[in-house]
Length: 104
Image 1 (cartoon, rainbow, N blue to C red):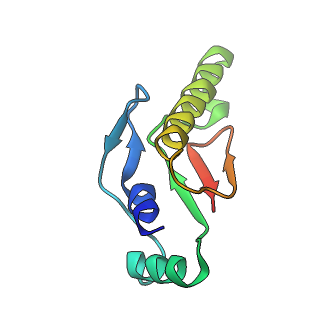
Image 2 (tube, rainbow, N blue to C red; image 1 turned 90 degrees about the vertical axis):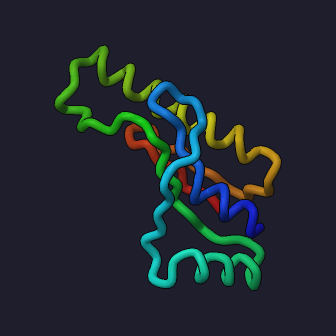
Image 3 (spheres, helix red, strand yellow; image 1 turned 180 degrees about the horizontal axis):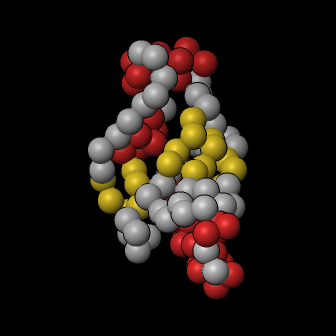
């Protein structure tokens, strides 16, 4: 499970959808230590993973650009889930209009 935490916090996908390792960030007080401890004791943690994809407000985009943005977000999310396919993910939810995935 600790390896999964490492991946959750280090995986982004590039604008073209290719996986990249990038700077990680945890906004929970105590950061990674808190998440690792919770994963160790409970067996899993709930996380929201930001993927590197376009995130302009839909109202600012033309219909075709909005559709393209939704497709690029979905592609980036799929790539991250593909990278994590060897790990036990109990639940995941891909957000349609924002570049995030919620998972346990």
